Length: 170
Length: 178
Image (cartoon, rainbow over all chains, first blue to last red; front, side, top):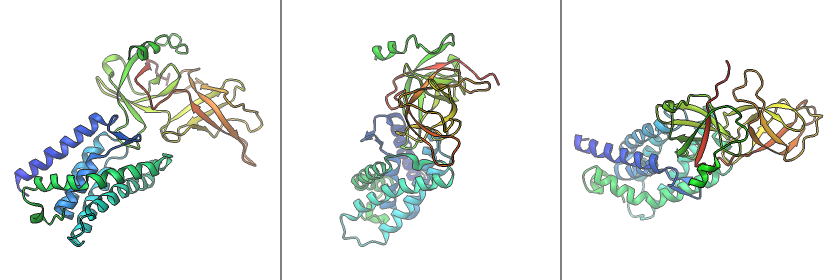
């Protein structure tokens, strides 16, 4: 990865982080906070494959961990695994299916919330106490599904070439 | 906004404890945080452990503070604990948060043989070594139940402060003795 690519990734992830942190109270659907860093991670996995998905996910997760009250590293681990999983699933799927990125985005969005909650439970965080967890999973799944393709296009630009050059299938 | 700010003036339960009124500048960043961030901090006399209230009652406690910001852990946080007294029956117990959108629970200290009424006011106990001053409203009893064989009853308490709609709060400049 070239220095300019690294710089673009850093600027994009940092911008999403600042935007999300500043507007967290307002950036909500049905009371559920929208996770832009997760959307970017999914886009990175779709556009760049498993390694780049995990890299962007880890970077985004570390930034998220800075402002969350949950143990440091929970978000980094969750996002890195999501980025890797999305990249792996995308690169092993047929190219013809136009709905696949949307479905993968939705699956990854909902799955990330559930993984984060279960990881939190393992670490004694009692995150399962939220009574409307199903709503959080649903909203994140819908948002990630809808924004998966635009996010992947942005990430393809960040990698500095056409999506096809980097194995992206969007 | 002015109406909300003036509503914070003259809180009836703070007595002679000094308070600092602060604006809530940020809500929870994620879907699983039970915190808010205040626009005032150490420079205004705020320090960790100070109770945070609205006109309704207890909102939470300052858990982290910098020069111009303070993080408040809300009463709904699963890690939140407060010693409480039931106003009519004088029963003393410990209330704890159960997560956002859920009521508080008192599952120890309240005698199983005592009749607890719905809407009974629950305030901070303020006993020796308590982390909160006495008589700050915490909530109202929603229900109570005793499991067979238990010596204590389980009391469900609805917080009096609406923690999902905070604009201004008061930080009580009060520290526990120890």
